[in-house]
Image 1: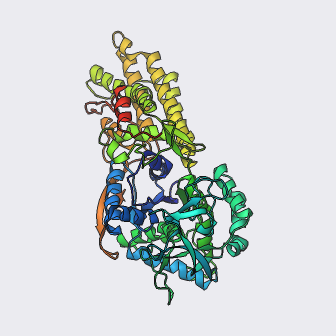
Image 2: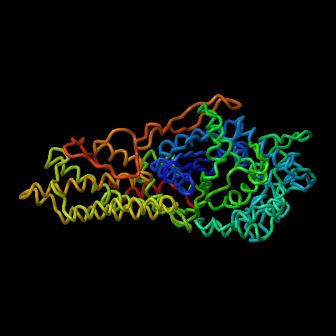
Image 3: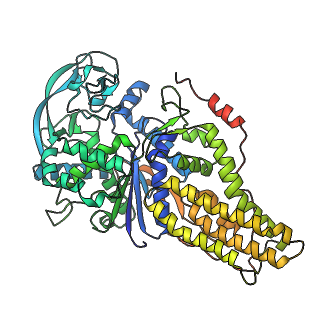
Length: 595
């Protein structure tokens, strides 16, 4: 498994609001778990994303606050960086879309599509506000969905039934989201992506290829049905003054539509990362290497854009950055989109303050217990529900009582009976070998689960293995044998220490902070994963701050390291804190009323 090139692409958050637990468990956390796992495999991981600064929600927020768009997205971009550092998300680059590099790459793809005749001009009717005397982007328009009757459908998509609209004119009773005023249709010319032609030229066949067997059924079935039902051309430009200018003469006042350019960020971020590292062509190892794997972590509302639209853009831009004019950049290897997470039985809502605002929550809660709970209830195949009672119970029963208690009592008994020195076990028994074999075999089982993005199952398997070690201790009872047979006590604790050394690695992608703590309490040197850092870059339109990762000093391996006899172990400390039920009352008291 080692020496593979793994590109981890993470959904780009709109820089208009703080991030809640549904966002984290939907894409950011699973991406980090997957990336950390592959780093332990010593694969070449590149994990990229950034703030979406051109999305209409950002401009809407700016107008609501009476601030410039730059001020708004800069404020939230900074808060994203703070959160991701606290959560331990190992981005090789977390940037944003308002950079010279992203402008250039987005325009290059546009021009490549135009050259390959997959773009065409079309006069269409767009919603126009007589009050403000300007065309409104589709996301400034709300109305009733003609398909499902949802009354807050956007001008380009209904979030309730995922129907995409060619024009906001398809909505019933469309009105301005800003001021509620009625709108009228006026003619305007735009560029459209010829999706039917790209589907015929390879997109449809690619989606039906048998190599999609590892895709989640709800993802691949949706994508196939979406294309099989027939595609229509989709506008890739809009009448706006904030965004990436259309690189065609006579297109003043028009910018690239955000749905079109935001996904290009996965490519532009890889290129920016390579430039920042002084290796400008390094990005090609992930994008032009046929053996590389590109995995996109998104929520289910973004499935059509990542399984249909973005692959269509990549296919249509064949010849881009290549001497081979028939070649296109790598298509997705997998799109393990998660379903939605609710909270206490209700939909998460920012306007109603119904959610866990993660930057705020991490002022009161440690990151690993939060990472663990969000993994344990991750909406991998169906919608899930976050409850504070569930968080407290899983923290106490699964982290504190099982894994944390195992580490704590083994290391404390080693300190009590052997002054913290790893004892000489003598000859191991069949029972000892059986336990260590179970842990070692767990590496292959857990490897397959991590690689298949089945992170809930990973947590359960790790707990099962931890339980085996606890059962072993109950059976060997080193606290009893210490009164009569110190050799048996030495053998039991030595075996348990070795098992913990393996479990530490199995847990590390989900619990990086406490796994590092166990690593150090076992007397091991160095950082399992390396270091995160925030850097300022000067190569864009203006200097900007981004999150980066340096794994050059990482010492983690996907194997159980033997802890040598005679090693003096540092003083142990608890990994997790037991939570009182008052946490539930306190946290629910911070919420709004969703009814």
